[in-house]
Image (cartoon, rainbow, N blue to C red; front, top):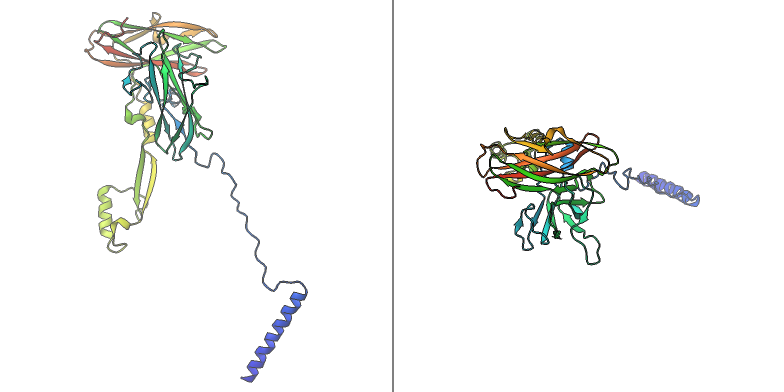
Length: 373
């Protein structure tokens, strides 16, 4: 026992001497700390990786680029009286004040904060280059509405607009902008609709002005269809999917889910509400929806015919650089059409070199005689 104590004291003395020598030589007796590891992550994620907002509205040019038919009776642009009473955009009083409503969506899971919304009118019909703000501030500057839009939701911008005293054809244009927009191609939408009342077997006429603002000749192709979107075809909808763990991520039906919980809750958790589950959010059926819309373009019904300046619509026309021309569009309604039939005819003007130029929707109301010429 005494020998073991002497051995311990000897080892303790040697350790103290070694520590004293290291201190005299300027060495720390504690082991050195490892160098801090620098995080390899960048200070800012690149735009193609991080989530970004996507403010948008029903944009005819963007949809046509995806091969989807369009209407110019824009579901995201509508007019009301100052008290909120809805007004058809084709039946406006001259020199009267209305409210232009522009609904802006956020097609992203990131909130779109500080979205700038502008509204213009165009008086020259198809592809006109004159953009006039519908509302000005007290100092004469253009009024811009700022919206904060939650993820996959919408907010509406409102503008007061006094129609011109001389009346005439009007096209409305709503634009939205955001400094970090994910997709800037779907930021512009137009409302360009005219209702023509006519009896069966007669012709409806309207004069529309077309403009070629380019410095080269435009070979304009005109096409007509009766496509009309339904609300569920364009509204953003978020779908929540719930998966139960242990089934390989397969989405279960309600009956399968109930059976699965009833059989396993006794020996896993004892409570169905606490059983492990996974939720996933997505835009419901986006790919299938776009494909269905590409196939939804419907040609004119049998017996219906559209002419431009006395020629068949499909012949098209040629506009010289900077040329502006009034076009007489005539819709021949068959005699066997039932009264109170409503047919929306979308007329789209395209140029092979520049894509969609513009268009308008003629809503033919058979049997009323309203706006017939």
